[in-house]
Amino acid sequence: MKTFASQARACAVLLGLSLLSMPAHAGPPLLCEPFDTAGAPSLPWGSGWNTPSPTYGIAHLVADTRRLLADDTPIIARMETLRRAAIYAGRDGAVLRELSAMLEARIAAATGRPAQALALFDAGYFRETLQDLLRLQGYDMPGTGHVDMPALRAQVAGEDGSVRIARALALQPSDGAMRFAAALVAQADERAADAGRFAVQARQAAAGDALLARNIAQLAHREAGAGTE
Image 1 (tube, rainbow, N blue to C red):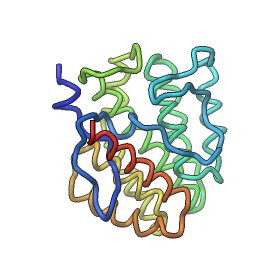
Image 2: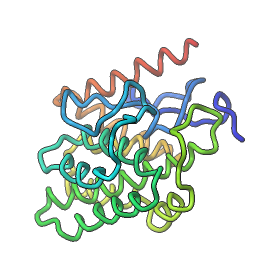
Image 3: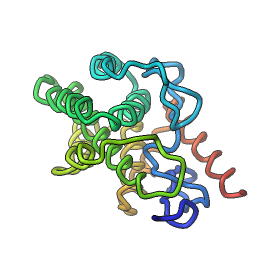
Image 4: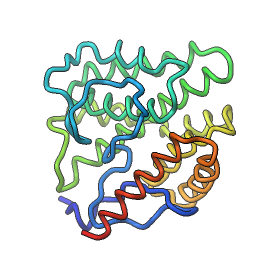
C-alpha cells in the first residue's frame, strides 16, 4: 500500500501563476478538500471532506443530484455536489450506475451551447472524481468507507472524463471556474503542462469572479498550512 505522506499526490492548489508543489499531507485533489459554494445548496454532508451524512437516504441521490445541477448552479457548486455524489454513489453499484447513466443522458438531451457545456462538464468531472475515489483506495489515509470496487472500476473505464471537460471548455471558452476544475483534473491525472496552463487561466479569471478567487485562496491557504506541518 502506498503511504499517505510519501506517495499520495497533492491536493492541487493554485497560487501565483502555477500549481504549487506537493505538500507533505496530501490526497486526491478532487476529493480531499470541500469547495466553498457561497451558500449554494448541495447534498447533505458532515463537517469534513469524507463525512457523508449518516441519515441521508442514498435512494434519493440521483434525483437530488439532478435537481442540484440546475442550469444556474455555479461551476464550483457543481464541483462540490459531484464530489459528494461520487462518495455516496461509490458505496452502491446500482446507485452509481444509475447516477452515471443520468449524467450521460443529460448530454444527449442538452440543447444550446450553455446547456451542452454544463452537461459535458458534469459527466466528465464526475467520472474524474470517481477516478480519484478509485485511486484513494490505494492510499494509507482516512478513506470514505466501503466502496463497490467492481462497479467503480467499470464506471471509470472507457473515455477519460477530461475529454468531455475539454469539449465543455471549447463551448465556454471564457469560463474561469471551469478552468479551475480543469487544472485540478489535470493535476489528478498528472498532466503537468495542462495543469499549469489551466491554472494560469483560472488565476487570470479570478480577478472578475469572487467565488473563484475565494476558492483559489482557500486552497492556497490550506496547502501553505500543510507545508508547515
